[in-house]
Structures are given as structure tokens and as C-alpha cells.
Length: 154
Image (cartoon, rainbow, N blue to C red; front, side):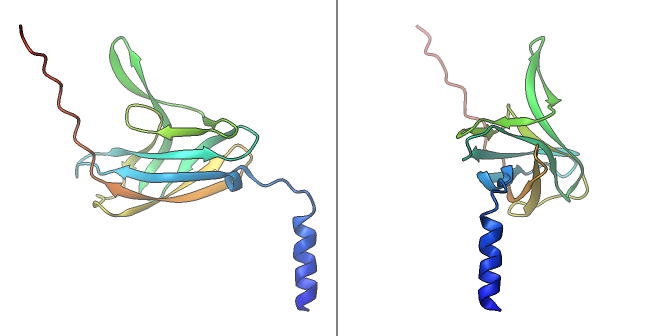
């Protein structure tokens, strides 16, 4: 019976069924910004790498700690920075996309409860081919903004 299982597994692997986008994508440094206790939303950030020869797109994100999860970017409108939903995040073949504050990110909206530094938030990324990948993002305290460089007066 064991030989039959090995043969069956070999047949499944050799059928030429293409791997899903999720199988060719890796995620590094997933984290969620610790929000103040009364904040209704926060952002999730990570580096998404695509090892395949085809572009892939993240079309949806989900998590259990918020009522809604959206893919977002930040744009300047009339000199004011605003967050806007995007339909997808494209990761080029053999490329990567850095999700970071002030740029593309995953927005968690309507937090169901306060998070604590060090908590883990499972985030499921869904790709345009229907495959998905779950990543465990650690809740981290935001880094302080760098101090402005003061110019010397002459």
C-alpha cells in the first residue's frame, strides 16, 4: 500500500498542474502597527516577494481582528496626504513590493478589540488566481519619526 501512495503522489506531481501564485510568493517581516487604544484602524506592513516568472496580484486581504480589511495606498491630493483603497497590489515576476507606512499597505478597519505589542495577527492574502497565503504579523510599536535636521544659521 505504501508503494501505491508513493506512485499516486508522483502522478499528482507530474500532471503539470501549475502551482498557485501563493506557492511562489514569500512574505518577510509582516507586522501590524500598534494602534492607540481608541483608534478604529491601523496598518499592516510587509515585504512580498514573487519568485515566479509571472506577475501576480494580491486582490484581497483578511484578518480576524477587524471588521474590514482593505488594500490601500497613500496619495497626495492638493498637498494633503490621503489614504485610498486600491483594487490590487501587483508583484512583478522575480520582483518584490514593500508595504510600508506612507505607501502601499493593508488597512485593518474597525478593530474589534485593543491589540497589545507582541500579539500576532493572522493575515490571509488572496491572489488573482484564487490561491491564498496566511502570514502571522506581529504587533509592533511604531518607530518614532526621525528628528528634523537643523540647519546652521550663518
